Length: 248
Image (tube, rainbow, N blue to C red):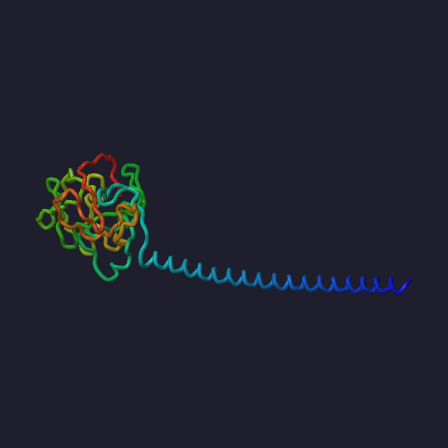
């Protein structure tokens, strides 16, 4: 073998060795990069998981103790609420103050009507009504007019006057008397008596959907206008009623 051929062979061996070394370094570098990327991903997942768990705990805490979102699925509070409205319910205020007349409250129905019967058809769910009287008040409906302690109430926010009279009822301690604004299509205290305050879950403070009717839900204001002011929106009053079943 000539000296030239030997040089070519040596050069080829060195090239092969260099390529092997380079390949090993590349593999090692790729492995290190993969480990780093994996560690970054795991760290990100861990961080996001902690954040998700924290947010979930906050959400659970808020729903149990502070506020929750509710969906209106009946017409018992028409025209104040319509079927499909979505409401923010304040659950903490009543830890510090007592329920007041005209508060719109969500509550569990009394034990006597919790189980539905074939005659009533009332489901076991959450009701929404307006407080019309408190403990110590005497409530009755006379000639379609709500009368509390002998004084007729001027209720511009109802759908129509109640068709049936209600005999005088004394609201006992730790109870309230609740009625739906859609008086003739509401299953309320006129049927099953005063509501225990302990059954109240919270009061309505904000309608957030639909957007065209978004607004706060404070105590109503007297008005003779065909449009009534409710928080930051107007609702057209309606005196028509065409529903045949009472709603919770």
